[in-house]
View 1 (tube, rainbow, N blue to C red):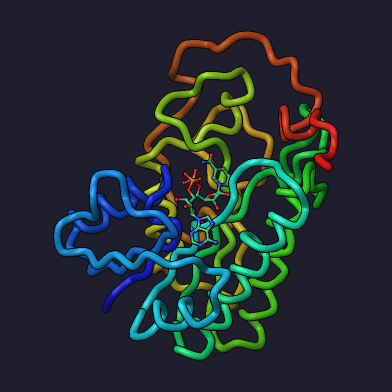
View 2: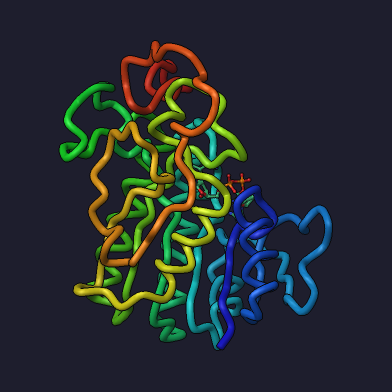
Length: 253
Ligand SMILES: NC(=O)c1ccc[n+]([C@@H]2O[C@H](COP(=O)([O-])OP(=O)(O)OC[C@H]3O[C@@H](n4cnc5c(N)ncnc54)[C@H](O)[C@@H]3O)[C@@H](O)[C@H]2O)c1
């Protein structure tokens, strides 16, 4: 029973791989760049670019769960988002379908609803992408929904908030996701039974201030250990939109 983590040399993937490996989970780690400190003991590392369909398929062979973190994580030209976030996601989902991987976790983003104003009711967060990056994550979720219903797999799209060691900006009072809560939530997303093949869930810590519904937390049995409200107040909120600076940027050319 081996799990595949893509984007494993990135910020979230590095820590997640270390923690899962420490808990005895057999891991195959994929990234287009090697991990800075090497892979954790016992883990297999595959250097590959998911724009290559064949590489995606080889990586998915014999896998029991896939956590897809790979992608471009900043705003950029539309073509870059299409290649790394949409085409690469299509490749890994198609590989998972062909290799009969039963559970896939997709790293989506809170930016898919980032053009909603701050201060709105937390139960209402309609789709409102704030950037080309967010449009690519919206497409990722749509692909996940399609493959969950036609690809014979279960898919959890995790709308990650702000993954940081500590909350450091005013908006983090609502958006913060601590590293240990990220590990808890992503583990649950890879393992917990689902009532239907596709689930979308916001990933934040149990922050007192909240902007988004906690739909899915009970389904996954997610219990947060952290709360931004217990950290020093980072000052008054000036963001107009929940996507923060992403929502304020001009479109890149
Ligand atoms: N960090 C956050 O606060 C946050 C918030 C919302 C969503 N997310 C999402 O979570 C995921 C992980 O975030 P992170 O902060 O660890 O990002 P990161 O940039 O640190 O890591 C992403 C990794 O993906 C790899 N990658 C990119 N394109 C690739 C490709 N075509 N093939 C193979 N590997 C490729 C990169 O080399 C990198 O190591 C991303 O998909 C990101 O969009 C993160």
